[in-house]
Image 1: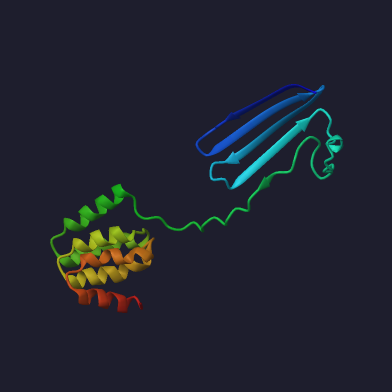
Image 2: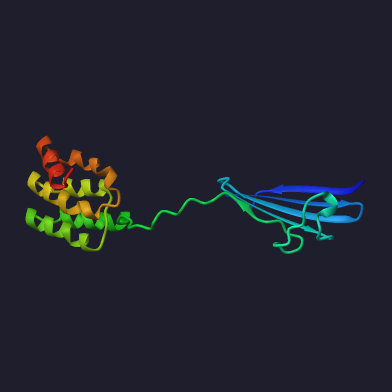
Length: 179
């Protein structure tokens, strides 16, 4: 005979769901806590009883676990992506672009544009914006080739194509990059 049973479901955050249940069945108390992450990729279950064996329910004892706890179950997690470089932040990029645009001569613009490439990274969109600040197609092409190794998203490099005035420049870029 079940003398008292309560169950509560509560969300701790947007990412996790917790379910807590307490049962008192004929003087035997059991508390269970189940936590599931919001992505559905992991579940943890803890159970505590006033009698550590589960034999009276027909379940085998689990000697490798501490008394009163159930093993954690979770799906295998995919490997985390290797940490990679990140693109220059928007405020830094705005300052960088303004510094390039403030130069009068194409050679000065290119030198200014190259300077941060020694230690910083850009995304393809940012590279295209820098290219548009140059007056000459040859300088745009030269910068596109120089910036490619410092691009955090080379799969999006096609985004820079609209910075060119001539289709031939795209072909020359592809050839220079070995594509």
